[in-house]
Image 1: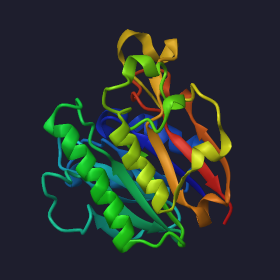
Image 2: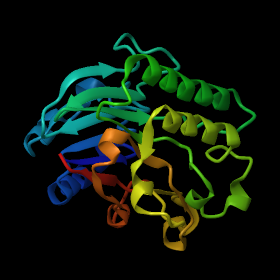
Image 3: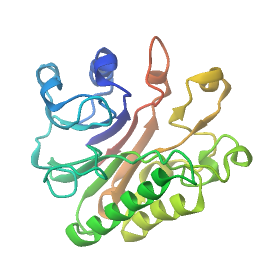
Length: 258
């Protein structure tokens, strides 16, 4: 089973690239973030033509998460409870069961700066996710939480830690919040296969950061151990970050034995 995640930074602008990537990467499940679409504008028919069922949680101009699956999609829940999204949830979380695996597509708030109310809200959102896992999920069951976490888990995941320490994405509190998800029972699947530094999933559009190797690894696939122990392969597909009008993120995928 191949599970992938990709912050596409506007599905309307990137639909052709996503369709192309689905055709050659052939994930069984693809989680999308920053679709920036209302539910009524989501291109379900385009994905159905490629063999994918889809669920989407969007608000229009900002955020938006989706799950595409060619192994079935059931028990869809938007947000933490499938109730009306409040301002702290903001179309950032979607759950579904695909091929017997519970899947979450997450788009964690950016946080902006460590001295802002948005940073406080980011930490609160991550804590709410941890609490939801603790009260509604079972770490002994197959579950994967994947998406754009807007946190680089450690210094290996940052092109120059000395330039970013003290900023968002690398602050101790943010890293501790992601570590708490791992302590609950999630495993960083990519790190099961690669220990090296300078393996990034996001590069700023400005100043040629992609070509200069100045990036962050902030897109994660976190799986319960029963699933992570069956992982056989993982890849950040840098090829999808190249070409005309790419997203600033590359897709991340992981393969699991059934």
